[in-house]
Length: 72
Image (tube, rainbow, N blue to C red; front, top):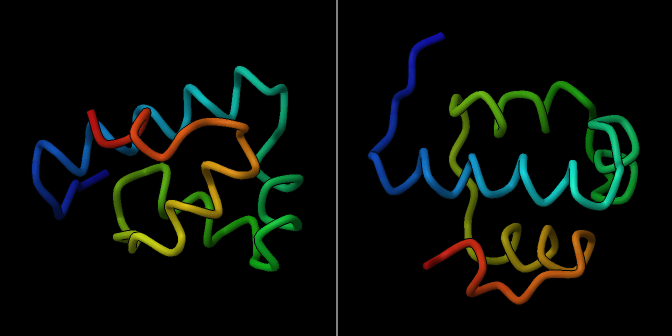
């Protein structure tokens, strides 16, 4: 696995995975809530795809977190 992005991106990805696990959802369940495929979410969580602020806001809603959780 090759991480294409910055250390900051890696930290956000780690927080996304942690938040998903905390709410007890698997990748398929989250992908359905996003209207995306499981492979899309897998690429985000493996650091192969960047996410924008709109996507991050949607993740925050799904995971019941303030968006700042991912940015601090």
